[in-house]
Amino acid sequence: MKRTTRLAATFTAICLAANVAGHARAETLSETYRVTRANDVEFQKIAPFKVFDNLYHVGPGYVGVWLIPTTAGIIMIDSAQEPYVDFVMDNVKNVGFDLKDIKYIMLSHGHLDHFGGSARIQEASGARVVALDEDWKMIEDAGARPGRNGGPSPRVPKRDMVVKDGDTLTLGNTTMKLYHHPGHTPGVLSGEFTVFDNGKPHKALWQGGGGSRGGLAAAEQAVETTNRIAAMPGIEVLVMIHS
Image 1 (cartoon, rainbow, N blue to C red):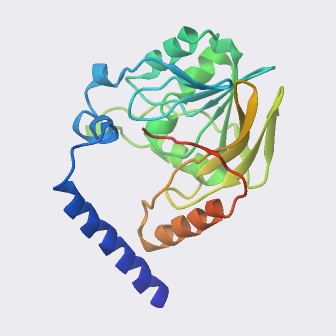
Image 2 (cartoon, rainbow, N blue to C red):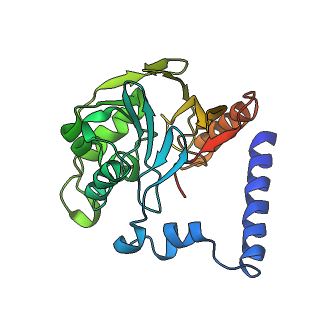
């Protein structure tokens, strides 16, 4: 009960602070992309850009799609959703790669804005699609339900690679250690790897989803995940899944 009370008090304090702050500041660019212009398709189509020697952003403004080039091909993180899938695939080419270079598509979690383009990109590239079992189930459930506003069901990838906490994935000169970080969804997938800035290595964490989306039990998982990430030694770069 004490733990529940602390969580509730913390949440209330955050909400109150946000309400007060909301009267004293301008909207951030992230809020513009994710809230007020979330449905403005042309506004979302930002140019791809290079962040590190081996890390590129190729997604729309509101959600991260990342490329990690290696000596044996590319690891892609997430895939956006329609109507941005052609845009993402064009951006892969615009930064100098071929779709066939993509060997793995890592799905951070089972929300449509992250996995929605993976079936088409897998077909175009031949890549393996990687997720945790818990969120493979979410993806499969989404493919069996009507889409938004009663539209057709979204295209989903067929269950492919199932990974678990502590697994590693190696492609060429890059090894990613994988983590199960539940809270945002039951099967959030994160990965620890090395990025290079003009050849200098830095320890990076792609964090597959923060914040709770499923009541008190998920909130408690999210707190545990946050504490677990805070205890990870030496992380210098946090690779975000949203702007």
